Length: 544
Image: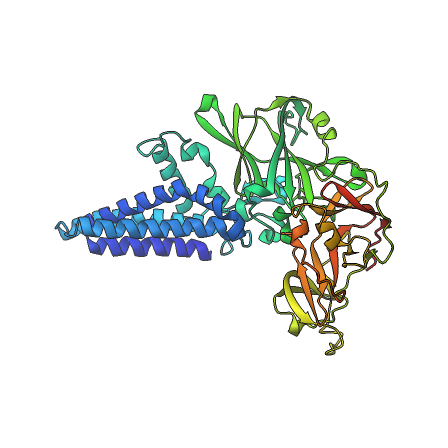
């Protein structure tokens, strides 16, 4: 109700203002709005994609609103200087014609603002208005549950879509009406229809996701609904996400609303958008299971503790003559030509990207329990929440935990911290365990300073389990003598040899790498690059 009222109010105010400014001024302003909107839609996506890794989930909204405001200002100033005078018309013409032009400008302006606000990272409702979201009544699939009384965002996308196929059609690119046919529905509110009613991650950077296989199964039969004949035909798209696509680095959540195929039907005369109805992911034991997006509680995700997610999205093929793109959390993905294949066989034959090549541990030194151990603490640091500058903390029933951040702090023993104020350790997602690897110079079996002399600075430091899954460090604890430096970044990780701090030769400094691994994983090796630098035998229990 709030959004409904605001839309009508702002359109009315803009129309009233330009009715009083005169018909010619209103026409010039409408022209500025049209040009600003067209330029915004032309540059919005490439600029946003370039900035995704820097601005994160708010990129799409910030860039859209910033471009529209900037272009509108530029065109207004330019028109005011090029056409400084006004044309005189009878007062009734100014009110009627100027008010009409003003109302048109108001609809387009409010529509652009709604689209821009719709792409922010927020709840899946915008001022208590939902628009198009997944519904339980629709078996977890996107459905338009309500409409604006004046659907300014739909009018705006329809208007610019029409222009993109006409007078403002691009010379070499696909017009907007085929490139982004559901822009209005995405803004209200598919883009924000994520885990936790919009609290999950709503964007991914190009470096965060890789396209794998793309298959078409003409014989795939969907479950019949409501007594109708079952649909036949499906596309399967395999995607691999790295940890930067995870919610706060803890795990992937991908809803049916956040993925789609965009294609054409009727010989290219109509654009078609389809969302996945099924997904396949890795389950316990390393096998892959196929599940339905038939509930608003269902999300494609990754096994706990793994630092990549391999997901197969399965889409209905009905109505699609050709697939042009896929979009995942706002990011447009180019697809290879589909391979005609049985989707069941394609999913079953998938190999996880998180596995590395098997290597022998022969000749590698054995790690003791003091070298590699399970334990979630900040030791040798005792730190209270009031001293934790530079750290992002979360609190639960068990205590206070470091979610991310970096800083130097005085060691334990120089002050006391009460139990309620004490930081207990690092955030430990469900199903995972915290493991610490000693890298201390001259003391640990894996002597990082000695290994720096032999291996490349860019070599990746990883633990490898019995299933050949590799895990990079999420942070480290560096005992510098009188101070301790903490660094914890589940999203950025501490992957390379050069990412770890160098230790002095005095023997007073110590260093531990911190890893988050699945409960039940049997850790077998420490690898730096392609070299096995330590052999281990540690099965995690998650009891820390």
